[in-house]
Picture 1 (cartoon, rainbow, N blue to C red):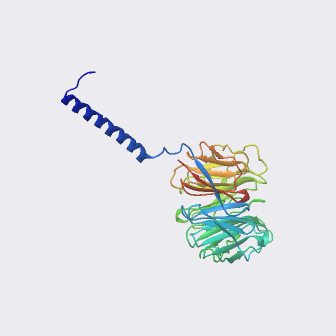
Picture 2 (picture 1 turned 135 degrees about the vertical axis):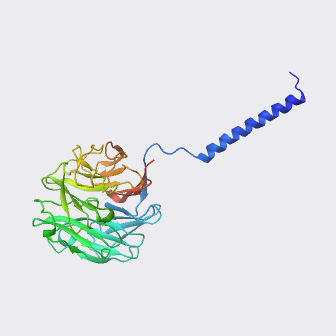
Length: 364
């Protein structure tokens, strides 16, 4: 064994100390950084507290979300989905199908039921769903309403299938407490059979400074109706997707005042694919086809993801897809059937569907 002098021993000790410190720094750095972020989207199932078909999702924030469904049912979370509290509108017919909901916050929300004649109704709560007041009932036997949306806590719009050759659009200026139907003379002429699809509550979208859009179908040629004045007047614009009876647009989503996607398909097709997504970059005045999604069949609902440019999530009986490049490419998110989708941010996206299923989705 080689003998070491005192100086050599001190140098070796100093070197060992430095190496130990560096190793400790590297270990501490790894601990502080935590695990690497997920490589792709995440989907976590949550317990909705109900087993009815859920069709519409409305996030008021990353924590507060309302979801509506069949059997006069709604469910609500105020903690990001860790717990859901379901309920029914006790004074409503038990078979009402609440196919749209708009959440103003944890206590205030508006529900819209869809169906022929007086099955189309609008209710409002101001106490978190403990009580509901009936605010509007459709008085046209041939009428059928599909979806609602709001610009703010006062101004909103509802859309329904055409009746007698006239479009059906309602407006409210008091938060949904009262509604007025626009006159036929103030609207574009309806095409034969034209209307919406009450699939996910996303056939109407509101935007900044009075902009709004409606996705229409079930006629020869799919169209988007556009407003610039909080729904007082509307103009029609052609969209080059599959159309006809039982086909056309079901949903629309805008990421800002100019860019958005319109979704739909042929509801009779479950296994195949059609041209069912179109893109606009001029606020909905003109549209061109976007890439087809991987999910088969029609798209029932779509949502732009706030805070993530070019990101959209779409759902339908064939599953769920996501794009992060404005519809140029799509990747599968899930293969289960979903009806409704709503997004408040990249880590606050919810899907809803059959048997009370709810899932929270996060994008990396």
